[in-house]
Length: 330
Image 1: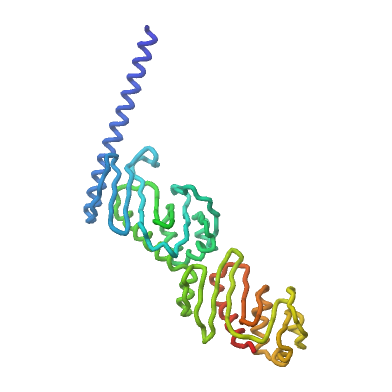
Image 2: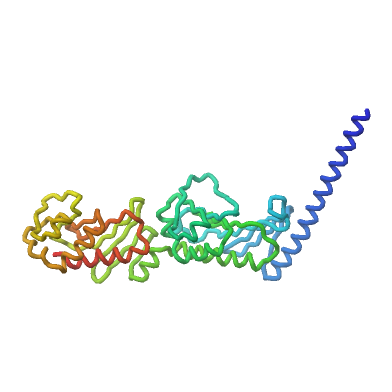
């Protein structure tokens, strides 16, 4: 009997502590909710709160969702916030997840490949996963990277329906949240543009997707395409010359009678071109492309420059090399 009485007393004490803790958390939630409501309304935002104290602000193109403080946060003093951009123009933004150390991870049902941007400062702080690493890397141009550097710590999830930004514990500082929303919008704009779009704009070329670039340079039609195997740059111009790197076969190859060319590349096509193959105006751009970028070649349609790498900063150089050669072709 004594044992049962002691056990009953222990249970009563435990329940009292539990009730006290629940009441404290409820009071904390009420205090936080009131402060959050006042801060949002001061900014002209009209929040809605559910019975759990979750704040929801619907502002048309974006929504802000803030969970109240809980034991899941570091100190229990602040909530956890998410910004959702609903139905943004994501046709040019590949599906990806960007996350930093200390940020919540919200990947669900995805098998993604870890990738690097080539920006060492960014790669040290961010882990980037995407089902399309090529398009994702090209989407992460200067504008997107600049926004990411100011969004630490965060997790950004992008799919075909929405972009969602999550970050850690927040208090009732609405200015910080609005700054995050602004940076998220900057990130979206940067991801829509991407690296090749900026390059194309500078050269007067179009970039319908992050992987493609095309247009006309100095009267020559050019195009570039990125893939898992690297980058191909083409300059279209009818040519009687054929050429490829010396390490690769070329059907119908003949000696050019130019010792430099014959040592470094194969040439073919019209044998009457031997005289032209002594002209530095043709030889120099031919060696720059066919020898300097192994795997590149000249055929009846013009120049194809091949790079095993995903070209970003080097893309204008590759375009100019292919263009120069195409204009010199006989």
